[in-house]
Image (cartoon, rainbow, N blue to C red; front, top):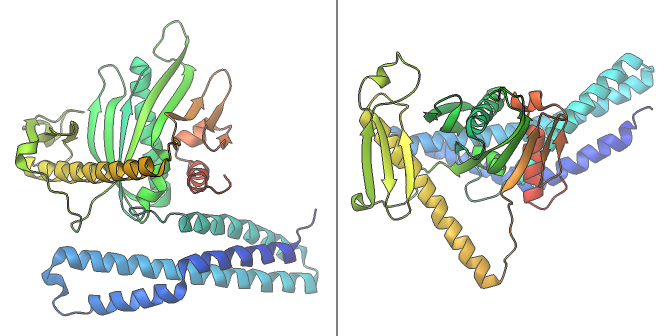
Length: 367
């Protein structure tokens, strides 16, 4: 069936107009002007943290404006390409236009999802923690599979990642792992991955080849910035130092450089062993602890507001996604109903469709 380019391009323009209305290019240009003025101040780098924040915001704003302008130009170019192909009755050029149309739909959908991320911390970097749950060694192996999945997803998008802490299970896999994703809107994007994940498969660790169900929990928090204010009195924390664990041979395994901080009032525990220095690990652990305390504070405030408003609806179930490898192959999100029949691709980081569906579901849009 021939593509109705007129209708398709009209739909693209309508969607793009909605994105522009939310993004507001005029305000974005004004913001860029303000940031450029700040960045041109001679003594900018006297305060390195502020300078990095200004230059980072300027880079992100310029990239956002460039994306908008490039998308508008691509839609215009597609319209011209179609007109030329129709006039010349050129089937090869029409096929090229068809391919570009599909690419535009995909890229425009991604831009549309970005406009749905308007939460207070959605623009922040993310700190993700994966913990094995019920299911013994299979759960520990599942936690390792999820860690690889998220790191592969980040690699596909060119996002910088840093594994901050890993706690290895005795037989195989991980008890827990914490890593940081540095990218614009990393928290807004990955926050929909928080929850309980379930794996069903024939256990490779069961000599009788029985089917095993195992669970892993994913926690996603925004990374705090220097401008955030969370005071943590020294009397509220307990600091333990220990030798880093993991594969041998690294210098981090030869000294007591790993740090575990326990926040006594809340019971939150943060371990850090990525850095070689105890001082560096303590600083990194405090940053993650402050991020968790900041999120906890906001969650308590939100819960109080909901209670006052009489809103008692639960927004997230404990079990949010199932990965079934036996007796059939299926990955299904239980909130959005989005599913894939290719678990191998999903575990290799192909989770964009699940994330997009989750963001739309969270904002009440069509998944």
